[in-house]
Image (cartoon, rainbow over all chains, first blue to last red; front, side, top):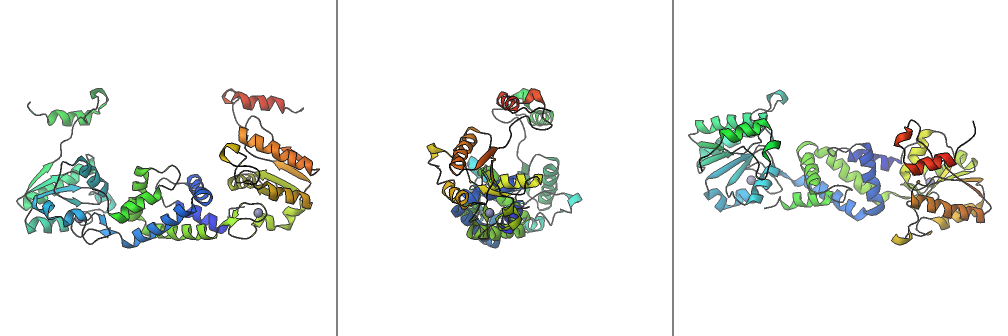
Length: 199
Length: 199
Ligand SMILES: [Zn+2]
Ligand SMILES: [Zn+2]
């Protein structure tokens, strides 16, 4: 015995969500059927619209339903001459929330990973090269993740910048503010010492 | 700065799912946008269809898109004269998977909870009373959860059965098979002693 065909299909359909197995999918299906059909119908509609209409910003590659995202459309951002390179749209949000940076972004939507067939073209570096050649950018800030792949990607892009006679900087790695030294891993501590500055 | 309106709407829409907060909703939205638009469109469609077409079985109250569920439609099940009372459709699945029980079910879709305004009518006991009066049922098996509410609900229904001159039994509570005695809570152990049988 199984649940009815439509309920079984719903449980299966939920398994496309990251980290959702059979038990969680069941819980989601019954929760919505029992308690929130209106919310579920809204999710169905928005999910459809988003999958049909969200694409990549023509300039920075982040996700947006417009041809060009709000940040890329801002003349003030363009005038800054700054371009910050990140791996994901979520990274853009994190940086924007600091309210410290007012330049443009370029979103790689990943990082170099030759083993997985992800080379420079897959992370949009041809588009980036065109933008570097166009002019109007004074400094490129490399804010890829402090992982092996993120570092390799940053170094690759720094080389690309040099080829275009452009300065590239890397965001500082070190002890997180409020972090306790004894709990910081050795690699981070090494970066913190190497990046020390005179007071 | 926020994500684009459509992406923000998608993230919000995911929060109708149980246990899904802002971070998880973001992860779901970007995972589907990046990696599985087809799966997301399928989820959208099935979600819509299920919310529109799934209703309660006219006989046992479980969820189904048909007027009467497969189990209630089976003459063999009706002939058994057994009616097992459970709290949820998932409980039906769990019992069916043991392949030990071949009677009908009645699904309360909850339990008595006067504080939350859930009385006998809300868990379908008027419908149950009609079925008891109809005849054809020889034994009612109470398989509500071994919680305070589940026990109270079982006792209420046992009384209803007595009023219809019907035998009601309660499934046994005790030490789970394969469980280690030292890790079993005292309440369960008490039940296990009270329910002891001669070998
Ligand atoms: Zn953009
Ligand atoms: Zn039924």
